[in-house]
Image (cartoon, rainbow, N blue to C red; front, top):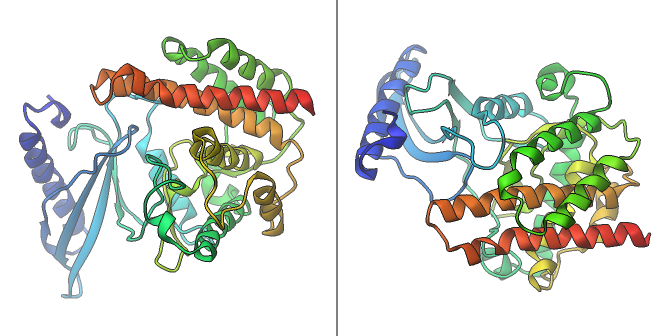
Length: 366
């Protein structure tokens, strides 16, 4: 029996704390530390592609000084819910490879563990970054601390996030992040689309929302792929809601590297643009004052040093197809776990497939 399947939440929490505490003590003792103590664990009710645990730890370091650190533990799901193959350690390796890169702050990776016997699945431990993250549900354009900011500060927040994306795309990835690249012939975009096709087939039972539109979107991105040789670090989930901001609206950390890869920068910019539409216009909302629209965001990406992306309409369509697959799988997870009724769960993929239709119409009209 894994810890994930313990009889009660209380037993799960207690067993997790005991197992993690012993494991952490062993790791730190191996570095010359002693008197390692782990506080109570807390678990946010968020995220569907992994389990997150928060804890504070104290110990006496090799030099005799007492250390206190806030830690975050990310546990790989025993079986994947949204994507084909879970790989928590790949995320940790990505963040470790980005550590120290100018303009691309990421949490510090402390330890990784591939043995599933400790917490029921592989996991990694990273330092906790304090700050504020704009919300997705409800949209940060409609509710939350972002709505209380002055327009100038809100614009600075958005601009700083976009600047971090540009900085990521300028990273020299070959020395430490080459593992993100796919092997084989063809371009990085070809490899990305091949993976999309496999995932599309895997998501078959969930593709119930606008299937004809989704099929048309997939056919378009496969049959009309641009000749784009770009090879940058692609975040894979580039959006404001995956950024932790400090009080002065600077970027404190970039989160969620599960779908990171090597490919054209348009994959990320298209996702950024599509997700803002998903959180704003697709919900009948008006962008908050200070937040630029689509065209201004594209222009600002270039001003900040990002490369030209002439096929941005294509990459927005690609993003909408991917978003529909994710939200279709999410709808099944939400219903299967009893979190929401089917009618509510259907809102997310229905909204996403609407963006596929909108993107197809824009391409056909151009």
